[in-house]
Length: 310
Image (cartoon, rainbow, N blue to C red):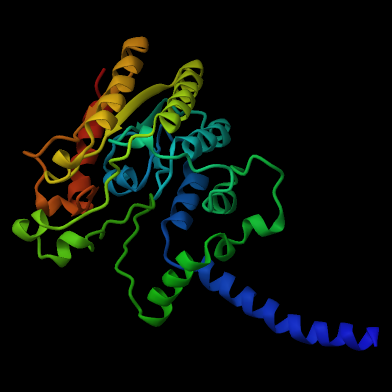
């Protein structure tokens, strides 16, 4: 009876395992930026001087190929300061020429929860960059990319292999040079239509989260300063309809932390393009808070100019 049970169990699980192996293989071969960024890091880690952190606003807004100094853009969607800090600590020993860290401090960055030790992208960081953000010993399952976020990767698999939708064009640095699809393009960049369109923005202040976030932020700043590395803080550009929707309390607290940081550490630089509605037009954005590849050229140029100042 027991032998028969084992036999049936094997018969049942072998197809399941083979099926998952195929799904994982297809997932690892999706055209995503992680592979390209990982390859660039592996090839150029001895030469990288600038590392960029942040969320999708920084990922979409800065093309390292447009910077004069060898740079690595480690920003990623929904990535917060706690993940930034852990990635920096995990990579710093591999980057002997690192002299500048670029950190996002966008509008509500201090009022949004940190990613935490079970953030799904921890598997991505472990698999592609060799950095353990789990804050614990890792297991075989932690390196399985599809299982990290099945709904996310299921959609990616469907879009790429079934629908044959793949407009992304990643350069050597993992930056998408063809990032134009989004709400603004769908509306044909019509400003009247865009003005009446609702969009996601945090307008709920949270003092508890703010205190946790600012504490970690200053720990990260001190860590970087102790390693004698320059710091650039960034306010990324947003479309003009985004600006009046910001909550005054959230904005004021963010600005107060930036001001305090720069007064305590006078060598820190600030790249502030958040309110620049003159140099950035509707054609520079995919939506109200994200630049497209055209807008990234301008923002990257501004960062490059700042990095090259004496």
